[in-house]
Image (cartoon, rainbow, N blue to C red; front, side, top):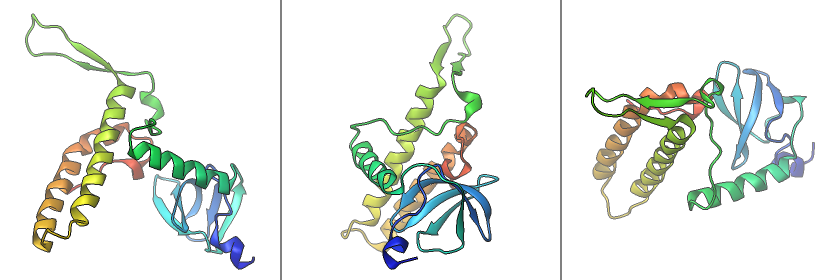
Length: 176
């Protein structure tokens, strides 16, 4: 394999690959110089493009086109110009969230679960942006950054109740 081949991805998004240590998994995204792979059991790992211990089980997609598509989607999604892909678990597709009030004389509210899930994903994405902005503020002391980071982490923790909706464990909320 040439150095040029090692610098870029060899497998497209959706490809089934075998890792020497972690077994069989699916390429779900790219990050700078690495694949994001979900292995059986929902374990998500990042593997360098240059790692030689990764073999194709079933190829899918065009690696270069997938990288471009992902980059455009991330840029446009961050600015709210396109909808981000939802990772809703299959069993919830088409479902309804029904909120039943405690008062007998008031009406219940039904919300399509996809709409509710999209709002949760939006909250997660905005928390991530907030986290990056806090960490990149030169005016804040390290102690202030840690304090604000703690609040953000607790926000993630409050949202873990909704992890049951996510298809991939690696996409769900994590907090303390």
